[in-house]
Image (cartoon, rainbow, N blue to C red; front, side, top):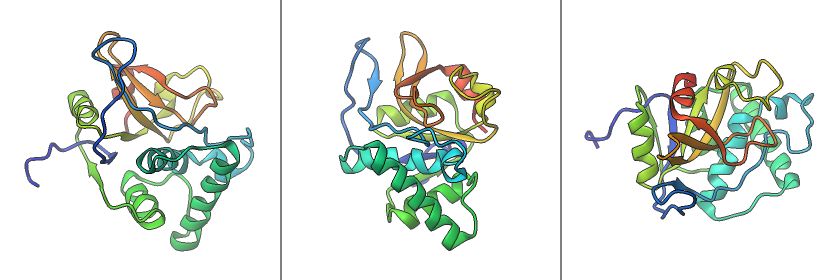
Length: 196
């Protein structure tokens, strides 16, 4: 469809859902299963320490399919996705937004109801959430200034945007870069400025 807004390197798994509202009456918040990319803090394992794309896709697909995540299952799945990428594409590190769509969502999961947009705005992200869609964005993690990252934070990172609070003007994310990333809030301008 030509009428769709163009959104910046952003992956949007599409599914019709009614967002649960908590805190403010205008808040959108989807109940998306969470996992850090290193569920057992094995940050020396490159498949986990670089597994933000895989963990983000896993969280999104768990939400789409209505499944739950355990640390054991998450670790196994993040490594399996990395192994799939390595076997089929020769690399598993820092995949682009396009590669995340093609290799992980479409290739590994066989999930086709996903769109990639460029040149997004804050309003575009909010509108996708209002439509019932998750948004996955590639980030410069250092610009997020998350105090729970190993400092200075990752240059290349991905987060799942699972909600928005208009009262505090914060995006609510499942950020796989820290075990404390479940429903982690970023001021809208901080998150937007960190998109890369």
